Amino acid sequence: DILSKIIELNKNKKMVAIKSDELGEDEKEIYELICNGIKDVEKIAANSKYNISFVSGILTVLELKGFIEEVGKGEFSIR
Image 1 (cartoon, helix red, strand yellow):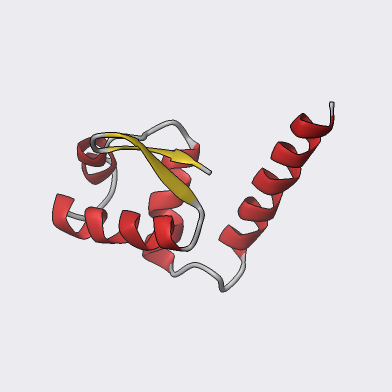
Image 2: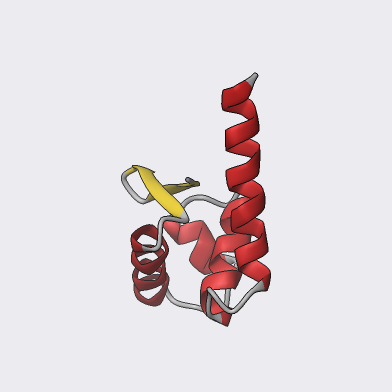
């Protein structure tokens, strides 16, 4: 249906942005972890080279750029 196509196109657009200069290297790394199903702040930090404080800042930037959204306390999803 049309809604499924729109969602798919939006995800493809965001995957292209990962490969472009739209995201910094640290933002790309965090975004890719979320794309791979790691959605909790603590787990993102554990699976990256960054501490929780830094990860929280990057998550805020990704939210402001429209790539992710907070779906629960400390849990994020691809928008």
